[in-house]
Image 1 (tube, protein in one colour):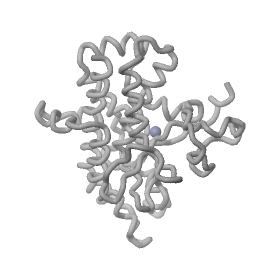
Image 2 (image 1 turned 135 degrees about the horizontal axis):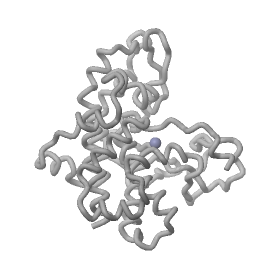
Image 3 (image 1 turned 120 degrees about the horizontal axis):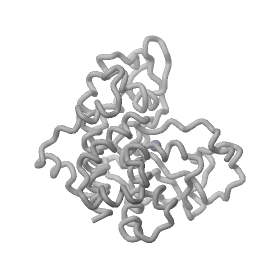
Image 4 (image 1 turned 90 degrees about the horizontal axis):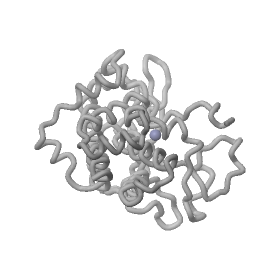
Length: 283
Ligand SMILES: [Zn+2]
């Protein structure tokens, strides 16, 4: 298939973050979930499929149903696929919060399209819970992979869009040793090397998976919308460079260091919450 030759879109926590979150979730799956995933994923596991949604970004579409979500600017797809019907778009990988850090329960606000992977995730979990045993195997694999991936993405600080307008989501650049890079790219793929050079996902997972049973209960309380709001509050400081002057946007190892806690917290929380969702689906 020609589309598979296209470069993979770089989204979310990169492979390291997505795999680390999946690994932490794997550590906390119950018996039923493990058994079901073994059966449905046919020899692969949630770590392996954690970045499928990025890899198949341009092949995995959903029907967005109504016209005002269709402005071209919000649709990222290669020109080769421009002939697709306009009511299709790739699954959203980011989400929005309002000025009080509340998540939205819809993806439209008046005539505006509100990015909302949390709403998509909520739908996927409910759909799998209901239909997983009877679904078409390929569709089932895709939806499980989306649950794994989108849970990772909504724990990624730069996948949160603060409304009203904060120029987030990679809309401004920072400078690392004179090199200009997009803040979103830094958080997606460079932060790992800054924090622990050469570490693999499993080392990050091991380092992050340290919460007690009681702490895990606290972290996984509530639903996906509550978790989205909590993430938005936690990640807000990481967006603060937004208001800095250009010189202040010189990104230093000390700056990355100041967010070490946030990275580990988001990996840990994402992992426990993903385990909770999967345990629920297969219970
Ligand atoms: Zn993604």
